[in-house]
Image 1 (cartoon, rainbow, N blue to C red):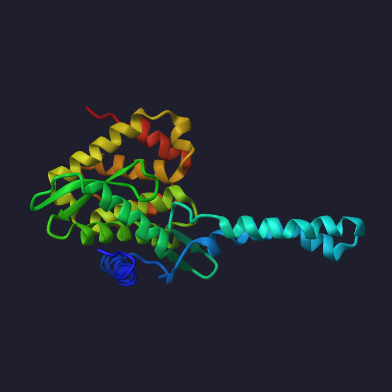
Image 2 (tube, one colour; image 1 turned 180 degrees about the vertical axis):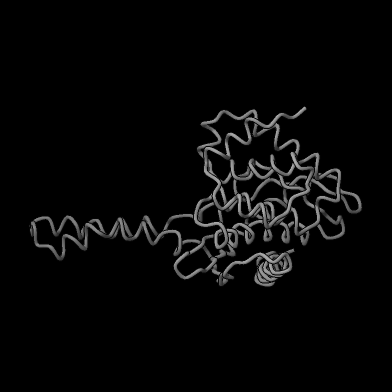
Length: 270
């Protein structure tokens, strides 16, 4: 399967399915716009462009020290070369709260999907089953994935797109913090796809909770996406997958980083 060829339709379908799921559950929010791009370079590096080019602009316009202008200008080619040579970053998603737009970059998303498919090629998958999928966001949490052995590529592409789009839409509901968007995004993915029906999914969630509890606090705190996922896995396990998503959203909106860590660490698991 060439994932790049039909990624647009996969992404658009994930966006449509998630918004319909939220509407069906009476989740009140302002629906964001979706913009599909080829790569992450532009929307990820605008801040870098501003930072790197500001000395040049300042030197050209301020006349504070005209003798330094040749030095400023001589750095521009190096800065431009550096920016153009930058590789796409790991997470192929961005959210602009001002325009309420989710940006999805196809090339890095396609690479994530292809990498997971390659990893699965060495595993024997018979029929339809639930397996573990490494997180395309933090690579630490494992997601349950319902997979059809006759169409592994489609199953993986749909799941990865659902997770990424769910994270982006979650920003429009619970705000800019990564830990809250990860918590809600994971909850949307798991609930929307009915994974609570499968005992294998519960086992994967339990393994996540044990791993999260054993992490040192500083390891968790370094990655808000990670401990946000850890938080919702803990809540799901504690409640045996039975969660009212509307009530949980209200909790997540006001969830601090400290409360996330305390919830994870204080939960007793046999």
